[in-house]
Amino acid sequence: MLLKRSLPRVRWKYWFKPWQQVDLLLFILPVALTIFGGIMIRSTELNQGLTDWWWHWLMGGIGLILAIFISRCRYDNLIQWHWITYAITNASLIAVMLVGHSAKGAQRWISVAGFNVQPSEFAKIGLIITLAVMLHKRTASNLDNVIRALGITAVPWALVFLQPDLATSLVFGAIVLGMLYWANANPGWLILLVSPIIAAILFGVHWPFSITLFGDFSVTPLGLLWSFAMGLLGFLTLPWRRYGLGGISALSLNLLGGELGVFAWNHVLKEYQKDRLTVFVNPEHDPLGAGYHLIQSRIAIGAGEWWGWGLFKGPMTQLNFVPEQHTDFIFSAVGEEFGFIGCLVILLTFCVICQRLLHIAQTSKDNFGSLLAIGVLSMIVFQMVVNIGMTVGLAPVAGIPLPWMSYGRSAMLKNFIALGLVESVANFRQKQKY
Image: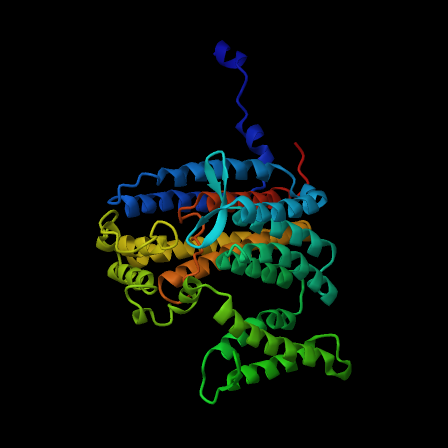
């Protein structure tokens, strides 16, 4: 009894006090996905002679340590460093183009101490921080601030697109749209931002009564109808109403976007990029080529039925019928070996993660923290929707990994660093006294 009194008490609450405001569920669920993702990667590599699945857990552990450390640091200190963050982001993307390594037609990796690092993954965080600072100081309710934010986004976006990395450039677009919406941008402006892409699709598809004037220049009825509708939207939402300049600008932008889209399709995009964008519509058109991934993935998911074949027992997975299954198509392994119920659990887990991110954005003490959380939310949601959509044939094969589950060292670290930033926002929602 005397010995017990003489020894100092271990005050566990004292050690956990610096993290008392963090969202514990937001830590637990990504860790659970990481553990489960490692198991599924092991399943896909079981009969391939590969043993690098443990890297998934190792990078997840390193990422978790970084996230815990970042959550203890004040996120608002990033405000004074945002231009340096932006400069480092762009410098790393330029370095990829100069000294990077190429694979599958793209130059995306830099070798650091024997490891391949993908700067475009970390550029997503750099962009989120820079945009959050800008929109924190000046909201997107003013069109000039929206244009300024788009100008800031254009530089890293262009550098990523030139690698070429179309998938990551699409993630950049989702991030900026989500953050602009949260920063009080007019929804009509956001529709106008994406309207040229839709115009490019409508002008590029050969509809009935399409007219080819000369070269690649063509006019389609649906393309014209869409362009005039966007002209009307521009007239109603843009501030340049005098002489109808807003409507004329929106109309011209869509006509130009449509024709540039046709030109890019014919002269800029590589063949594998075209295949990835279109094959999901009819993968049976090229069942042994571009459509092979999608066909095998859908068969694997469908074969799982309700409860799946069981871990390490899926025939499509164990016989290696699904290419790149440990990275982009990891969800097909879940569908085959754990069935519809397993897929539903994964989807519900992501939904809860997104709900916690949204809750932190709503309860942040300032706009900067709120925008950080929304930027991370936009990134996670877009990657999740596109990845799962492409495995079931509802989205193009864009090469976007499933967060915390697909194999990818840079992507794993990026996801946990982003998680740490959001947890920092949660941790410093109230003034704490230690």
